[in-house]
Image 1 (cartoon, helix red, strand yellow):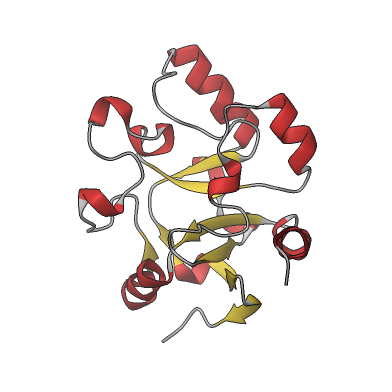
Image 2 (cartoon, rainbow, N blue to C red; image 1 turned 45 degrees about the vertical axis):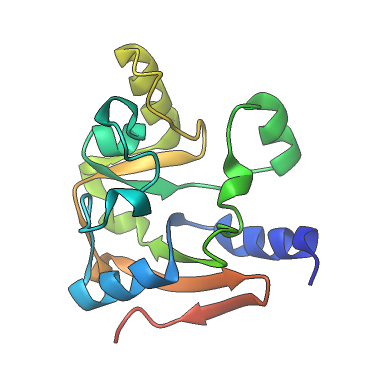
Length: 169
C-alpha cells in the first residue's frame, strides 16, 4: 500500500473523534495500567523533546495528555497554513516506531479538563510559551490522566495497513 493511500485511509478513521497517538510498546503499558498517563514512566530518550524542561512540548508543560482532533484536517492546506508543523512525523504513524497506535477517546468523557486545539493554541500564544512545541489547530489537551474506560477503540497503523485492536488485555 503506498503512503498516500495509507494516509487517506487513516484519515477516514482519524477525522471522526478525538485521538491519542502512541507506540505499540507504550500501548501495552497503557493497557496493563488501564490509563493514559500525563507522566508515564519512560526514559527521557523515549519521550518527545524531553531533554530540557524549557523545551518540553506545550501539552506536557501544562500537565496534559495530547489529543488530536483531525475532523477538518487537509494535509495540503494544513502544511501551507502551518509550515513549521511536523505533522508528517506522526500521521498516519511514526516512521521511527514502524507503527502507531491511535486510541479514540469518547468526547462525552472529556469534560471541562479538555482544551480544544483552537483554545490551546490561543492559550500558548497568550502565555508566550512559543518555545514549547504544539501542533496548531489539531492538537488539544486533556489536563490529567485518561482511563481506558473513557476510550472507544484503538487502531494499529503501519505500512502493513490499519487494523482495529483491543483496548483490554
